[in-house]
Structures are given as structure tokens and as C-alpha cells.
Length: 123
Image 1 (cartoon, helix red, strand yellow):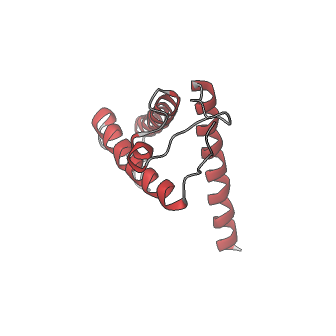
Image 2 (cartoon, rainbow, N blue to C red; image 1 turned 90 degrees about the vertical axis):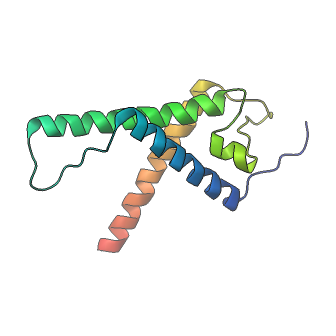
């Protein structure tokens, strides 16, 4: 096996920007405009639509990352543009299950990180 070269911060940052734009377009084309809940609108039907939109949004994000990272492409479209390949420790493509665990692991730690920042700001 050849030497591992890990992606730089810049590569990862550009890849997630590209993936974010692509995912926003996919979500907009499949689900339509985002449903917004403001202080004046509290109808039960609107809350159900908002919740359903958010659930479908999360599912599309999970499928986008997990399917592409576990495919023969070994990465999302953004990762491909900057030359990043997702592999296991032996350098082979990862399974859909592993890609799913990676996706939700990153999501969980992002939420924890944001919560920590908000707590730090308010204290």
C-alpha cells in the first residue's frame, strides 16, 4: 500500500462548501422552498409540515454523503473536485454502514460543538 496523504483543512473546507451548495440545490429541487416557523404562525399543520421538511432534509443529507462515500467514487462531488478519497485504514472503499456511522458521528459532534459555543457565549 502507498503512503497515506491526508486532506488539508483547505481541501476539506472547499469540499464541504461545494457539497453544501449541491445539497441545497438537491433539497430545493426535491422538497421545494424551506418551511419557516415564525413567532406569529403556530398552526399544528404548519408545525407538522415544518417537521416533515426537516426530517426529509436530514434524510437527503445522510443519503448524499453515505451513498457517495461508500460508492466506487469514494467521495462526494465536492471531495472529488478537490481530490479527496474516503477509504478505510487499508486504503479500500468503505461500506454504506461505515459511511452512515461517519455521517451521524460528524453530525453529533457538530451539534455538541455548536452547543458548547452557544453556552460559552451566554455565560
